[in-house]
Length: 204
Image (cartoon, rainbow, N blue to C red; front, side, top):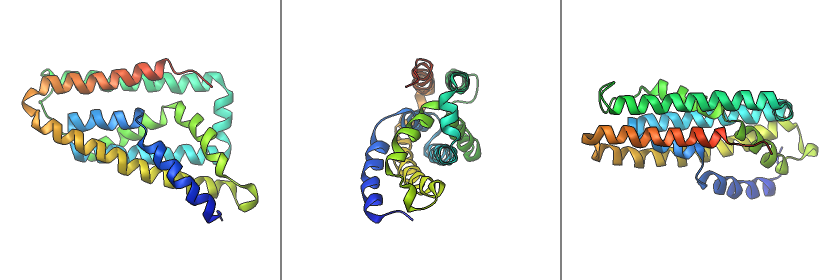
């Protein structure tokens, strides 16, 4: 379906994008600090699943419709801002005695959180629409199938890299476990910063 030469060109480009620090990586960093490596891996899997959803929507043409409707873009953006601020509040609360210090998030909950964070980031929709079509050839076969293959490559690379970032942060979190209050402030600050970044995101 896809020319092997095109796929070979796509893989390093996708890997370079996966390695670029962004909202997904910072989210796994913050979650790894607060909840440990297992939760970070689960969140990374949720983010990867969200990426596949975005790619599927783009392949179906729905992403272009969302990008063309200012109210839809803004609605998704502000839902994401509110969700990240809520996560920041939870992190600070758990680190200051509102919940047991060092409490571990369930794997299923971490997966859902990563999925929600990715799906409520409209920047991912615009990124997929700008990047993936450069490698899609309508003459090579079904467009949706090509989108899904490229999306799988992006999702796999992101899962591994973001998960490793979370593992590193989880190790640091264990060494600082006695300072649960500060861990709460640090991870809460990361989530709040991501919310502000999303709040000031402008449509291209």
